[in-house]
Length: 325
Image (cartoon, rainbow, N blue to C red; front, top):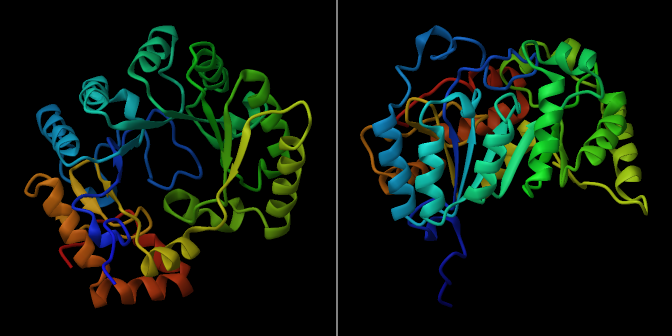
């Protein structure tokens, strides 16, 4: 029987989805940050990354994404909206027909930015909100502003850009998930997204004191589902079903048609894995995709994935870049 195009991940000549981590810099130093981002963090711990991509390099990659027919690009960080050429990249990708997602603290979204994002037709803007009050939100996100995050959600909603509120559960806020949902609903959020705390970066190092118990998380999900089912309505509830280790196990057997671009142009298989088999300073997007497909079949990568599923200490390497395989 002839296999149809798109029936398997290897059928695609380029990834369908690109997660682009524009920078590791951020004015916040969140306790649970999976990327170890923070103020002045232009490089990774130990200087393992060279300088971040320049405007010229980033625009070349964006044009290559358009040429390859990539359907969806999600910008994260660090704080992507603090990168000088952020808007230039959005313009190139939007004009090229690429759907866009932005993951942000909301600190940089005022009325002009909200209007511009609406005009660009950005399909998903996720704003982090980790508590129903400034005290809770800012305790988990030192350097962040609860007031500005909530104002960003309201501004985006008023401009017709259905914002998505992202809630990261920890031991400090898990019991307050329902209250955050109510605030998101009142602010006009279209989606309320959450999932298990990621055992990566600072979140992994503080796991013993930061991670909620399975029963606490289960109760939070039950409370959220009850609110989402109310006749009065509210944001669509999106709960990611499993944590990092189950994600690795699932992707090992069925890789997604996606790659992650690090701030220095290295191309990683997954944010939870240290393998970076390509470099967009040296490879085209198509070449990077081919190298990633080969890496998923590499015995070294597959062996590491199987061990990481059983041994969470290996997740300490997630923010490193190893390669080529």
